[in-house]
Image 1 (cartoon, rainbow, N blue to C red):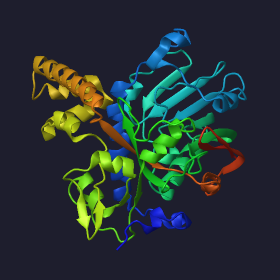
Image 2: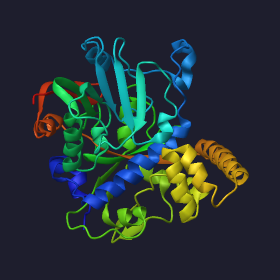
Image 3: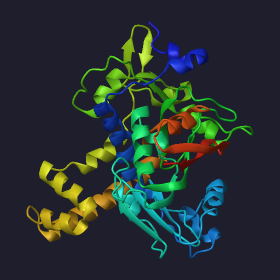
Length: 380
């Protein structure tokens, strides 16, 4: 039986629609998006705009020209919302940016500026007044949600806090690429701390081409059952996989399963298991540490009920040093690979999604830098 026929056959690519239950969708986003970005935050260099660009190195500011053009259209004193802001790299010369992200770790790297403020929030429940924003940025966010319903809910939440006649810039990674094509609309894309691409370099090869060749296409059948304990285990058992030969040759091990004559490699964990193993904590400690992500002061006070401040400091210091050192060492041998979930959008798909959101209307759409981009207006 050929499990991969829908994925491997380009003529059937539209039939590889992933069906997730609400619980499964949240679990996948938690492991393959939120947890990964929390881990990667440690490797982000703080942005410092006071330094010349040639001196910024890892902390350089890379802003898309099309987004900067969009921002120049706003009046003086405008207030914009930046959804999934990350390090909040965009700003208004004569206005204000209010950015939020679900990853507290990355927000700690945001440069302090008078016209920028950030906070931790969930895109589904934005803690702002209705119709209070003059505009919004939704940059590289919507493609991380696993189902059309969840993408629509996020856009509806964004529209709710926008003023009537205000506009938002929305983009998502495109299925259609210049020289390559994704094997599926739903993929797990590897991120290497110390990148050495699986695909060999070629004069006609781009970074996007190499990413596409190493991405893992996924497809989940519609008759899903209740997830097993352990996200990776149920994900492995339920997902139909296709892994490029170059990746497969470099990663064959005892984790592969056999189905007749077909070798089915397991879906990799979002975060390397050896890194996860360094963070084993008791349930109580996990609870207090999660609180500390939202409020370091309250978290430390709660943790002091089970650990002395001295022990807390020692544990945090050892964990930081050991995790960082081990990550750097293993990355040299390509052992540290993180996987992020993406839904890559086909031509017209982003426009159709926006049109389904009450109160939003697409006023412009275009392709730029391997992404589909839309400018939408709040009409009521």
